[in-house]
Length: 338
Length: 298
Image (cartoon, rainbow over the protein chains, first blue to last red):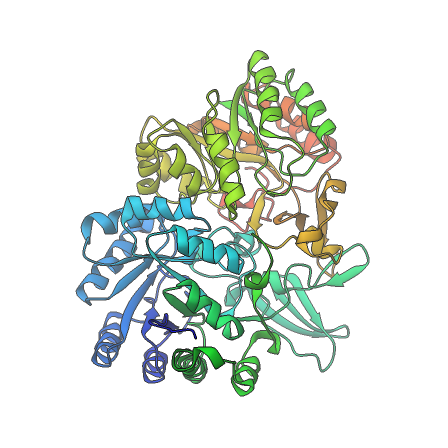
């Protein structure tokens, strides 16, 4: 019989105050948010927090025993460096539970100026192996690393075993098929990337058009996809377009699909993952409420009855309905890579 | 300004690699980066073979640097990385912080283009840990570089990627295998057939990306030959040319002449149109634009 002492923290996205409350109310152990500027990787119009909203969010979450973390996960450039250091000061003033950072210079600054503020290494820091993690730990005493979504279960397990710090993995949401922090496809086409501007395939570069060939989506005028009448159209993220090599037109890089780890939740718990992260600060409060609630139930169900855990078909169906392309995958986690 | 040849990004058969470096011995390049940095499965040329090439290139007067992988996951990959970092003879280019972890305070190293260095604080830190050169991330502009050049430590050299298909992203998935409907684990090393990658077009025939195994590159090569004077004024130390299968001897010659101020604008224009069998280029990143753009030099 399996005995589960500890289940991973459920870390949920908050793109707005209502979304933050939805996550807290539905069982998040921690929420993460960003300020309304380029200091975070969901720098989308109408999203994120000013200082006043952040304070309200922190008060709300802390009252309900939920931790709050700040995503500061883009790469500052010298001319706008103060924006990031100010955000760090705000994080300290708000008494946040952690800051999520990718940039080496900023990690060093945070270590020196805000030693008591817990530092988590962002997924944008591209740490995919134990030596890279050892580097971040040794230099900046990061408390937790968030792993890129490119590792197999065996590799995740090896990393957890080899590293002295907490390991967080993604559990649900949009799936980057590229190593995070190392993809500049978006700036190649639009001039803005996650690293520099906190955006991928930015909305202002998107255009839609109806043509005799069907509905077409473009990014900075580059044709990303063409849809037949009646075919569901998705957001034109570059890596999810249909492109051509030879005579084949297909999803040459990645199908539109979402990550969902509910089927392998027991393995993730048993190998000692410290936290499971839900992606999606750009999503609505209703979405956050649903996904958070299902993951809370799943984790608690597993803890209560580890031997008989099975993901409820109803959870899977509900998650599928809110997924990209209405389909989900285990991503790299189910690959046989050593 | 010196010229470097970056690591070969494609999976060329061993014979082709040996032939290539045989030619390089006679080319006017100063620095040669050697080794595989894209896919861990490409192991036809072993470390000892690379070291043999390195010895020959050194004898021919080149400075050799051993380049390392960008995406490291398995323990076996870390073991290979360790062997490269422990080699007694040549400096190493780190493309992941795992390599920096092994090299720091032990020996000088090059902080490669895949270490994210977007501000002077980061460059200072790497310099402090032992980096003697940094390669600017592909997506940064001349204007950003100017700020970094003014604030970086004096003893760290600056290198700029100036020619070749730009590495845009790396994945755990193999796009060459995907194109052939094969899983990565049974890829049959099909990327060996594509000595310059495989072009990926939009449905309007726009050459957008180039597939190279687990890496996606710019669909068209970058060419900053027109920006050499600007690089000189920005005190760039090294320009990096990324090996392509066609016309590399001509590319090296032209960059050497440009650095020596031996080219007129007309000569550059003519070469850009028909000098290498390619007539489509990009240079947008340098000018603060989308990377795929081509800006005619003022």
